[in-house]
Length: 295
Image (cartoon, rainbow, N blue to C red):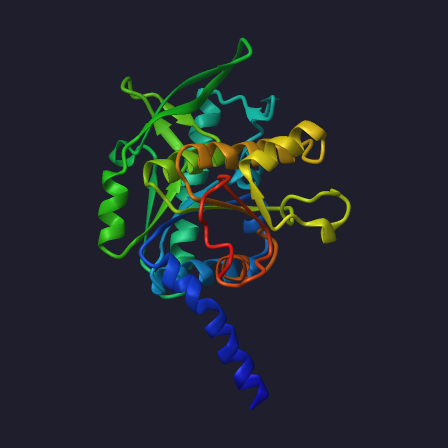
């Protein structure tokens, strides 16, 4: 009987969050380490379907760096990176599009379908979702690497309104028909802002923002944008965590209410973060906003 009561208490704990978030859009950036373990993969996809069934509107934006690297290696195509961005030749872009749109995207759609959900796979080229332009970074020509100029949400809204989970590859195009490889984090921010999403979730390979990067017990559960700026200035947030937090702050500045950094290597990370009091990662928000901290 105690086990049954514990299960009931878990559901009751989730109730205020289910009520508060019902009908809202959540954009989930999915990729990297979160996609490497098949068993963890399964729990994350189960969470996505559960979010849909309890009233949220999930939109998935995925990467696929390890898969792209693996295919380029098999084809004996050398990879070059400048400031963390892949130099993308026309030949490389063909491989990127093949892997992201033809393999990774369809695998995610299939997994969602396998858990009873309805999903449709897209690239940013479909319905002109992501209009992009070429990036020139510090004078370096990165080839077919793009940044987003405009997000067209019409097709995404049509799918959501008809009960589907959109799964989007971060590939964009311009008016001349050029195809561009777009950083998945930036694509997730742009899509979340355009959809006026209440939540944006980054599934990463870290626990969240830590006061001491070597001590998981120093996890910062709640972090407003002003505190984040102070932590960057003081060096508490440093190294590879800076661009992650800057992405979060950009999303908040563009109107997303809550941005979460979660450890995607942990099973059921989405449900544990969104529907429990303590959560498991770091939630960022704009200072002064009412973001359900006291439920």
